[in-house]
Length: 121
Image 1: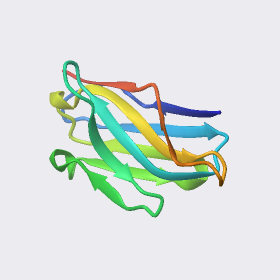
Image 2: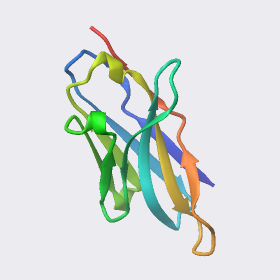
Image 3: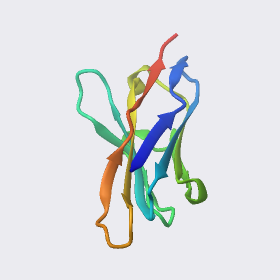
């Protein structure tokens, strides 16, 4: 089995920073892309950022320059550094990991349970 667990959410004032972490554990053979999504109340889930196994990153255009995604392959962990947070960044942030459990298995998506980020004074 595979577990994906996010951490690091919380309450922050506008202009503040938070660092989210997401660790994948269990029966893992190889991890491909790791992504962060977010979903605000009443809105659809949107892609925030992604990072491939070779370190190639992609960001939502509106977040470039404020958010930074990184990963530690030895720890099967992805991070999201969020700076200059705004009230509109408030959402539940979800981690998505594409991995294989054995060399014969197909790539599959695994999701974490989400972590709440609240931006308020």
